[in-house]
Length: 399
Image (cartoon, rainbow, N blue to C red; front, top):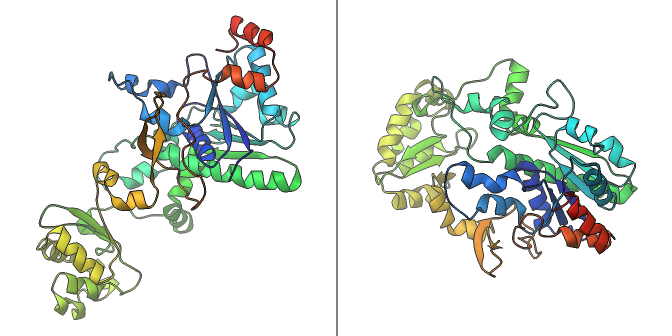
């Protein structure tokens, strides 16, 4: 879909490289500009105190890219990056605005080199305001600052960490979508534009329904335990064999009578204490107890059949090990085979990018690169002579 689109990715860690990975899976050529020593996320498993040599975290976000190591603290490194951007369609960066401005790599400086360029800044808090230059990570900018963390915690319990890169990859999706929209405009008008994505704004959108309630009414309900749910039939329950699952009730009274049949208590469908949303809310703890007992009389396999027979929307609460074996994950194309970074021709399973294009090559385009693996190739394509390239190596501008 994006064949012929050239992306210069000047970014580290996960959110912006994740967006670059999506664009690469969709066919764009992505040149990853790394600092001396490489992207810090290459050290992910060493940082958490293990001796694991493989790094599927880095490989996932960087598969199929070309790696060029450039020291952009040096003027010649900055000039080299500007030369690369001058011939690109997209510049994707998560460097903070102040650092970009000091290096002459901010949007206003770059746009004069390439009027058709789509320039995507992915930051913690956006490009304006008092916190524009504040460091941003998903657990801080996406999870904590937005209210997602506080609203997710059941009332009275302590905050807990966000899982690895959850907010980053949500923001990756947003950035990739914004870039694609701007590319459509650039190809139509010949003019590029600045695309601004941030962990903070994406987090607010992800929690948008609750935020809309807060903004309109000036308050929002807290997250409650299972026995305190306003809609107790949209909840989590456990089967006799210890399997948890969730039910999502449709609007109105559609699902109460079918659920009563599922638990073999059809008489409850007409009980005035439970046959309306108000009644169930007023008696929510009792509803949960009734359903606990009813669902707990069946093993998961039998209960699944009963729920499906009544067209109830439900899903098992799975571990990632169960997800990896879930036939639907494979049928949906959500797990793809990625070439190994070891370069031995083997592949291994990895998460797919978030959108599928049936019939198109929308999967991994190659393994993740080693640091600076493609530096010479990219500089040659830029028109640099071997002597010029050797001089850049000698000066420590590239590696």
